[in-house]
Image 1 (cartoon, rainbow, N blue to C red):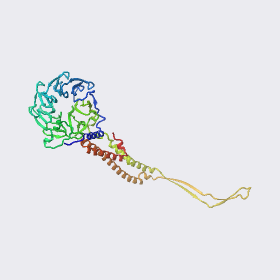
Image 2: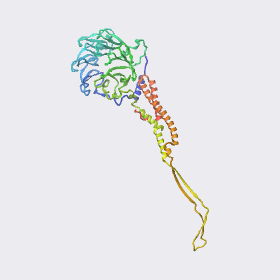
Image 3: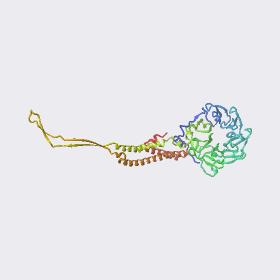
Image 4: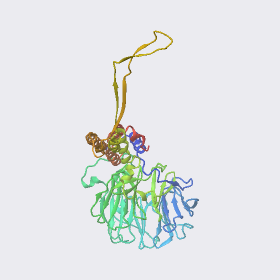
Length: 520
């Protein structure tokens, strides 16, 4: 058996969870348990979601105001007091069944009064782990086999064969076709098409039975889990042919009522050991693993439990308003996906783009940093066109010198004051303005601009091509990380380093813009 170090797994999970936040700002899980803890199951009234039942380790609790307040409606006694499952009677919504560790209880007045209608002969038979309430019969799965009553619980008989002695994990059925029942137990998945008259094994409990030598990947299983990889079974409410089985190695699907099976993509699951499956009122498929709650959408699993502060999720339920309820070790939590998931229906990729700056913004930053904006060329052309409006200015000076001398007479009263003087130069100034109006249509600078424009366009295209490749490579790497399991620690570390390398390359092309605009 392949072993993994638990501490390493926890560390890797923490690193991964810190890097990727799925709808963290959109999905809010509200604790409506009001201090009630160690909850194991939950049931919401299909017509009135304000009426909620939840089961703890020793009692049944009911709320009639949507979880604002709770009251104890059944306290269990005995050695095993766990409440494992609730079901309504399909013919009477006032009638309620509670499968517990101390037998099956029944109420005809929405939990006001209870009576025990099934009790096993020993501890294992007494613990009811699965339940199916059909118009013609009631099926109770226990740790020691499957029991059937066809008279509303007044009498019971135990099925024969493996299904009558195996630990029953879950029972799946569709009220549109009540004669088809599927029972998941540690020995496999069994199917009946005749209301339990005969049973056929349609899914093996362990791939090793099918000749495949697959190493066990789960370390912390109890003894019964080590004997079987089956965890749960569920039917698609919109397609009677579709079955889903949760196993320790992911989810398997049958499209032909269990005759053939295929593996459902584990893309997005942090842990392939799927404990529970739920089809909501709108036929959305949800799964529970040790890592959280996931929704199957667009051939991948999408985590929904970021912000759900709990260590163990034990049960999921939904109501007719698209709300999801999670019964956990530390309370009952509720969230509504109507608004949170509505904006993400069209593209799963929006999840990966959520924390990244837009590609157009990154490209603009790269263009600005490299100074290859197209506006630069336009500015050059405008300036070249305006050049013809500026005249050529020339300033001239003309100086004529002379060698003529002359006497200037002095005073008439004094002698010897005549002066011989040289004649002055003749200086002429002129300013000339000229325009070449032909340059309004074309000038030699345009040729130079054309050459520089071609070089700039080429450089800009190279930069944009590199930025685009790096940007979408980051998206691909994030998707690859999302597809890795918690056990792929080496590959995860390599992918995370690749993410940092791509971010550094984008920073080099954008002057640090990319990392500064990442949403941490």
